[in-house]
Length: 241
Image (cartoon, rainbow, N blue to C red; front, side):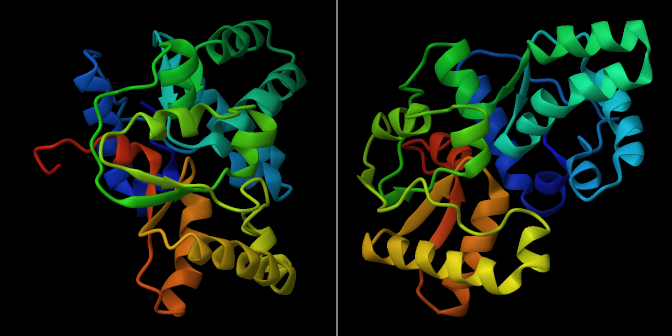
């Protein structure tokens, strides 16, 4: 498992949930202790040279893995879209070959369940009213489609409510929310209004970056609505975990 620096720092419960789901399905989960960041923050803000060592470290840590599961579609999108050209830019034949081979085994969490394992029902139980936000990277870059929704529909006890404008961006976009705060806030207002209109107890997604952005607005408005990563819902069981 590649937890991502964002989750490791701010949302460690998501990584623990991924482990619970995969182990419940009979898989052995390994966590290379030397993993750090995929380099997305550096690359997207103009520090491509600083992102290169992070890519090389990722390859060194995971090149022998049978599958690499990542609870973040934005990080997987970074790898699939930029790692190949970054590797080719070095001119190192071995690195190019290692990146090409490894990326075939890198999966966003829900993608691993639905496309690699062919599953929809993972034995989850979550007795709450929930709505789903499709984050941009998963929807547009990875083509996750309705995979996350199919996983949610199979959860026992859940009351899944459709979100109006589910395909609309929440306005986070990493540093976009800082550099374009007014536009980001307007987009966020539309998204939180849609969430509140569902009367859901919680909003879920495949990316904690989007969920943090949405949760900030929901919290400031004192709505009582929470956000929860898809993995945490799928990790739920009737024992109360």
